[in-house]
Image (cartoon, rainbow, N blue to C red; front, side, top):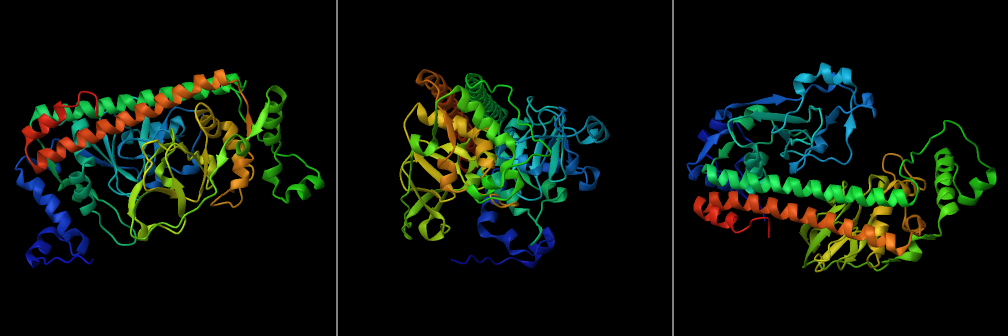
Length: 467
């Protein structure tokens, strides 16, 4: 249904905006709720400073290196609350020193102002020496608890107000002048501190989650004798014509010896099987009910660092054509699109009603501890190399179900699998706890705005560590 609003000319002159989205009634209502609290200030009136990222010409992405600890934080690394830490890129020391005025400090807030707009993340103590890119704007202050501020910016009011300030049509963006005029809700210090505490505990849970995941991966690679394995990509190699005919491939990359070297290394030490024989691939596809509502999982809903599953809720008639794979909870899903990015996950058991995923996933069912073992293995260098080999396409590489089913699986003793499974389960539980804590923090801010600060304090005090 179309949404209309009538705006006085004086309002247009006041805000120097003529775009209809700015005057969307829902956006106006959300902003008015913040203003009605009287407990707000404009962002520009806080004692702090905004810093724009360096011009793109000041650093070229083809200058990334792998042998330094100086991180380059891209726009896509800025997500809700915290920076992604799964696909970091690094720059030479000389570039870090040259661009030092754009270096990050603990407590800084980054706002994505190009691309995916309005994401805000706080820089925590674990972020190494780093600079940020032109896709973000940095805010630095000592006058407010930034762990509270990041909760406000990520609650429904903060996100709506940020989105309201987006400008442009084809190339949209957020500029500093508009950010400065954003109302910042400032409840009493006690509530700010309690909200801040939940955000800090959530970050600690994320760190615990990652630690468990790394322990599981290290245990796997150690048991396979691949702890220090690094693929060696030779510049030249050869293959027989018969090999090309047998696989119907003529692209040189397919025949790189690194793939066969890995498989031979596994075969020489372990009994092996194939993924498609060890887990059952779901072949049933459905056509969603156009009148129903679904939780839809697509490739971008898999957070790469440990494979956490997110989803969007959509009516059946708004789902894309490839939303065809029914989910009952507990499945292992493996992306067939850009597979080496590691979009592999175990669907939470609680996602078991009206859930559907993209047919760009291969969906498998099996039980623990095999499920967790296959999860960590397919996300490791072992799985990624095997999914890299059969890819077709360059800018949008893909594989098919048969390729996924053909992944070679070294069969470790069940006792080893049983050591890996609880680490993965604990990793996912810690991640779940972190999300609960962040939801509590956001809800407390929203309750304070919509109802009362005392109500918010009562709400947040009920949860010492989460739901």
